Amino acid sequence: MQDYDRLKEMVESVADDIAKAEGGNKAAGTRVRKIMQDIKATAQEIRKKILEVRSSEQP
Image 1 (cartoon, one colour):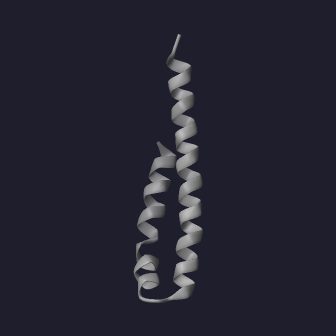
Image 2: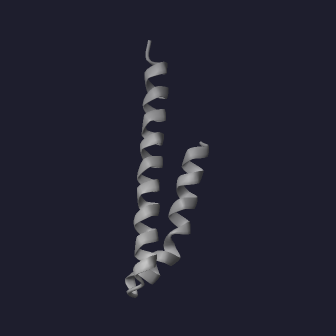
């Protein structure tokens, strides 16, 4: 699933900023929060698609 691959890439891309934010970098913390909102939205899209697949399979 393409959305799942995108979700994995988003999680991997935020790793550096998380380390910087833990070190006290406020700008990195802001970037982390923004990316986490995007991750949340992408995860919700995946949930909706999974429910659609499940619903379409039931007779």
